[in-house]
Image 1 (spheres, one colour):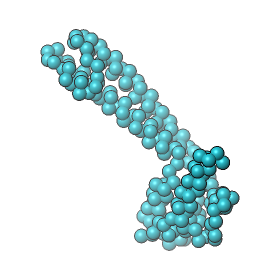
Image 2: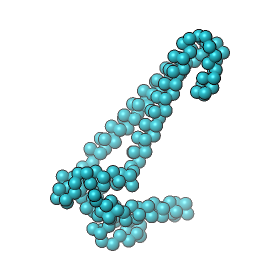
Image 3: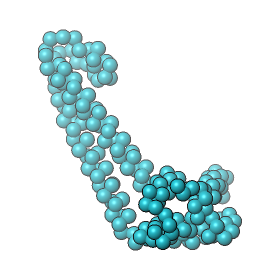
Image 4: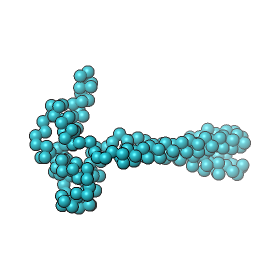
Length: 186
């Protein structure tokens, strides 16, 4: 098992640019997948947050729809006091059965339409991310990334000696410095 924190950043980037060179670097597919997963955890893309939020919206709307459908099924029997169910589910209770049915039907339709929209937006977002990833021939040049640290006054030393663990620490320090500069108006 390859240790993530001690793996050379430049080597990681070169393999990332051309994964067919894994065997040239004596790295197993399993170890490579593990390194990439850890990299993605440490360096989330803004798109991944958008996909997560879109997924959350789909799940919440789907739950809302299922709640309305369940309640509609439950009250299909006109007899009975369902006010407790409505209160538990935080849904407005109407006095007459016809009003309850009408309210639920309206909300089922509305929620189903919103769910379709949320699913479509999520799918569109995932497809655009996929196209962006396919459209870029290679990741941004690692030396440009490292130069941005040096321009910001962060000493790197020999680029070939920089590990993924140290890069993560430098990146966090750089983000904190940028945040402090922003707060201080600089």
